[in-house]
Figure 1 (cartoon, rainbow over the protein chains, first blue to last red):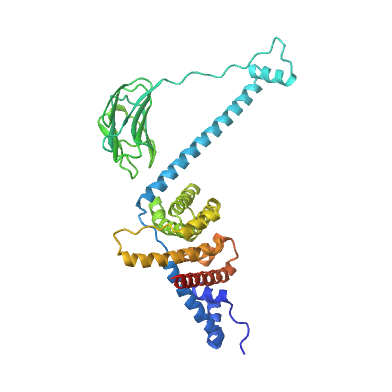
Figure 2: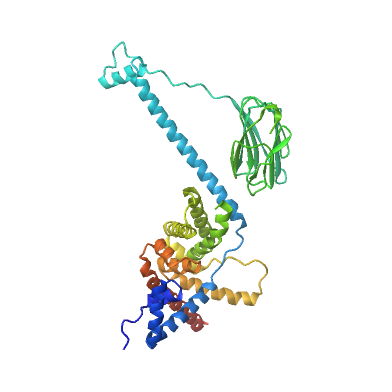
Length: 255
Length: 167
């Protein structure tokens, strides 16, 4: 008489090929000598077939081609947010450290200020306010934006001085953008923005919704967007991902 | 493995799993993409099995956390079919859609864990991966899967009987 029948989990593990080889051998040996378990094994086999038939009826999503791009886009956004968070954290840490170092110096105005706050002696003559932070205003920013023309557009930069930093980003929307930290001569046309002699770092926006959008720098295509990632056929970028690139205009016009 | 390699290896099955688990193409796509982005953020290191298990686990948790159960179930019951490409034969399509609807309803009455186990197994996850994904001992997966299969088969049978008696 056979005892210790195989439980349902073992039968399914065997059918699924998930039993260890030694356990599988033991299970098969048991099945050979146990009609009851063989019958249950048959039932389990039939059950598997019914379940498979039911699952085969379920929907299979189609058209995943754009998902590759969507995942890249979400990843790029998440990295960008992470960079911003890291930068903010680093900035706060730097401020705290700088404040600590400044307070430790005997001649530091901060030291006196901290001591005064600590002592509560705010009325004394030697109390000096901490030096104000450097509030130098950033360079004046200028720029223009235009809509695409029939889904396409071009941002053209010319007479860009060597060493100028150019950043291009793919952003949601349907407008081309060109912004300069400093002066530049701008002109626009349908689906086209041009900037000459930018006096500082340049930021270019290519719209995500564009069928095709290009950035030309000194007559060369440096970046092209056609909905599937940023193509960079021109200069070697300082850094780049599928939605963003940063360049520095080389000396002597070389790439 | 580079991005495209990872994507081609894991994403289509992950997406199908998410669609079927939620019954909602939008929610399914969102969960699949989010899980994939998290894999990229974390750094896709480890064995293929480990990565796949991790992806399906994260997607399952995302779906569980985001979907309100009643709303999700309602959508499953209402049906939200992904339309096939090309013009279908109307009669064939009606029959196919009825069957599909029955399968969706049968799946909808299962518990979240039963559904996850069945659908992950369907996408080729091993028992070890399933155990990690639903947080159970590997030795109990066979039993849990067997129960889930019986429940699904019974639910399918009920759906068929219900349709025949009402029709």
